[in-house]
Length: 233
Image (cartoon, rainbow, N blue to C red; front, side, top):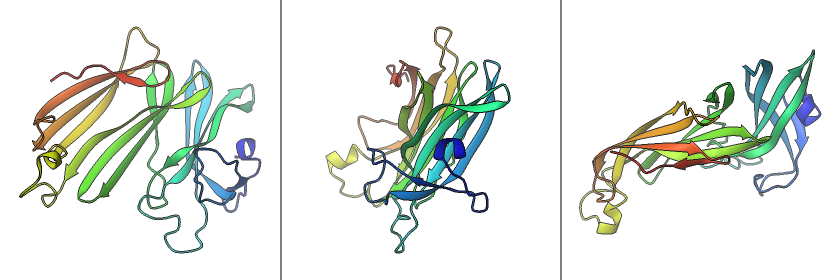
């Protein structure tokens, strides 16, 4: 924490940090916040010991719900350390990567293999509002010295009967479909990064564009993000 934030309080297990105002920093937040460790994952890449390090932060509340509302996320930071002899150095960092989570709490981030001897992060999220519930994922990849949000997308959605029953308009019916999904990273013999295969099972639908059935979409990493191929059924 001292290497990337400049300070660390062992008793409170936090770093006090004065941030720069960037696009990813919530405009309503103060300039000074406390930062804690969310994930510290060791791995070996090309024979070199490394750590992928994730931090999270949000301001202390002055009033109830100020920073812990349903849609209130936390600021996620990412850093990659590598061992050189007996010392650790920072290979890459983005301490204001983005806002994730809800109710002022961070999501369950995990280490994700993204290629042979390559690792990134998987960030799952869930959200519900107005009778609709969704599950999403974000796949974070380090490429060319940067951390990239290579893919963000929904993998499941459901709706309640009140919103999609009775005299529902034709326009509304197009959004009335429910599905489950899962994904896997699969090798690509011609690329350094795995492909991502997303399987989508629509199990209930009033939508002509999204009928009941299963589709499989393969995504390939193009150097900055995952690009989908045409889905198959």
